[in-house]
Length: 313
Image 1 (cartoon, rainbow, N blue to C red):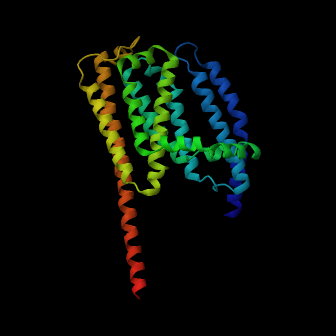
Image 2 (image 1 turned 30 degrees about the vertical axis):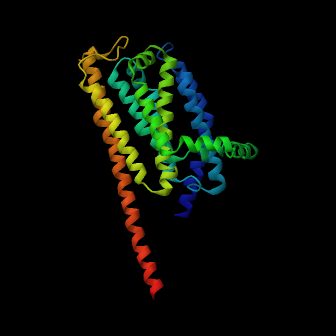
Image 3 (image 1 turned 45 degrees about the horizontal axis):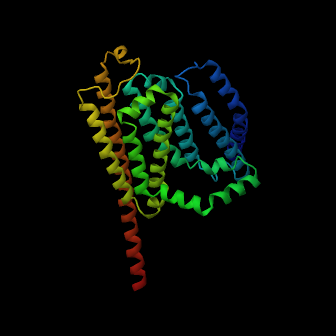
């Protein structure tokens, strides 16, 4: 078994080393087949996604060469990163993105993929550790020093405070659903990219604050509250869209008739996706963290009782 495991790890490391050299070629081939014009966001999405993948794989390969496969970066973290990255591609560089420019319901699905699926998966993977290993030692030391710079640390602590991260995430959701801003995103590709970036960045801060930040180190109780609060205001926005009888967002060249929908029905379907789907996801996450919170508390009590009995003895 040890020989089989060693052979498997050696093969995996060879693949990880080879992929960074293949990724640019794949990106160029994808660019050659992608249509140009307003629907194309190759420069704004595909290139950053490709760079992140190359850096992560190169760093992971270097780290595992030194520490061994599965050490430093665990296998489940690699799985989370692969899942999160694939979901980003699905949301930003797939036919879903192009359809989202013409169908409100698809646009809503695209947003939920970014905020509810890709963001927490990437946060759980903690990818920065692997990405840092992609750089030479001297650069890694400089990056580590820059991260410890007091103003930067203070800014990061402020942004990842659960309350501020929840407010920023909520503001991004509500502000971009103001009709003027939403319609501007549909009419302008740079504004559309800014909208996606706002959703993803605020979601990453939100999930980091709840899953990896100080809330996780203290307890899950605060995270449960913030998830419940987010589910409520997302449900409210979704309900407003789902129950509206008027067309709030006016898109260009709507694809709703191709799906046997009117523009209002398309908007109502998108609102229903947020009202039911997004709210249910936040509530499910809150229930999971509540169970972990209760479980950690119940497991701590026997230890305290056991230590008290031993002291009496």
